[in-house]
Image (cartoon, rainbow, N blue to C red; front, side, top):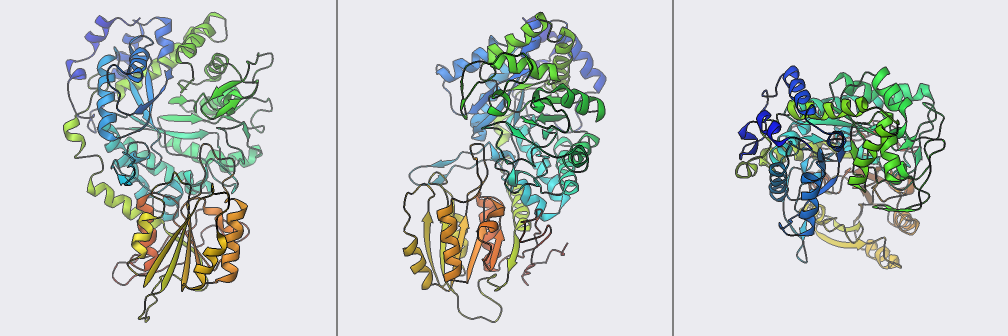
Length: 624
């Protein structure tokens, strides 16, 4: 157990006081951070060293002190002595208050990471209150990374990193599990998609490096993911083990380019890929558990010296196959993503990850079991105590470099002046507007009211979204009403067994323009990002019957492949209100359109396709 007396002697009293996040320029020198890490490491037992490497998941929900949820958190900190957490969804204030209590409870400061791929609101927002659909507010939401790629603007990527760091540190989060550095060069990828900056490795590298600089220059560490690249797959690693079939030459010129650039930019963390890469190692071992990839390639060849974080250790991609010759498989395991057949035990998977070179075991389903597995791995000769110590030292040193050994709690009084600040929201709105891409418009349907026209059109707006996607279409349709003579709105839910498509086709007959907006996209539980075939057929029938149809992709940007004959195709990249507003302004002609596809849509559109639409009332952005 860590000596509390030793810790108190090493940490200032300000660590437990109400204080703001670490300001820029106040991080300790590297030598001081190493000295602090070494002095703490000398007081720790082998199990406490192992616990520094295990980071469970945490929700930012309200948890009363006597609730089972808080008792679990208290045990993880006070009894298991975990080194950090990955923060999931929750409102900013509730999340910060919970993290403050956790920091006060812990003998050592905790590192907290979060998947801030589109800004702090990717995790820290209040959601919607039913039945009124009242948005409860939260942090700043940017478009998905592919939308940022469509802007070609590295300054916007930098600003996103800056704003994410400022808001995240105000909440008490120290490490963004972002940016996604995967090159999405496979349109059938069910899990990366718009999370990537695009299909061009140099575009991904430019945008990723800019985001990293913005983030790390403002007090938050970045984590590039998913090494060595999850873009060229057509399987979802949450649901099964996936494979990248690229040759070594292709890996060097595509997948590895953004990671090399990120390492040169000083990225502090890299997250692993739960999949097979035969060109790097022919044994059936996913990259997360593969020393040839994680140590041989990443550490030795590419020279990465930062924190190596596994992707979630409860995913099928890392547990669903025996990954070491002679390793015993357990029985079926029930995980967050379904039942994993013939699964590795969590202890076996954790030992393999540490042996491969991982520093952090993220989200193991059995936290005490994961810690014990690391201790047992030393005892059984799977790896040395020195190997564990090197990772524990790296974690402790990072805590000191973040200033957490001096100040670890945040001020709830100042949080509201930073998180969701109107100036931050304005930057996100600019990014969303510049991301809108008019990929094709042969009948010139955009803007809805053409120059010289005096009458507004009659518009039918059809929204395709799951029933749980409460905000889908609401903000976009509100903008359309500003330019439509009449606006008739309809919803199609893929879950419905028999939508009345004939009724919708008849409604289109009495409209001047039909707009179909799809919010169907990739995700953790998605095995196929395409629209269900009955819905795709309806869209094709609508286009054949009503040529003046505009298709808008708020989800999967490759939707055009299912409706190739549509005359007008606009890509908005993301479903959130910031992108809905931007798309609406673009369609009605209240904002310029300058985005360029950061992907190709084979065989229909090339990389870089896009039509400009300028508005005289606003300064046009130069065409790229």
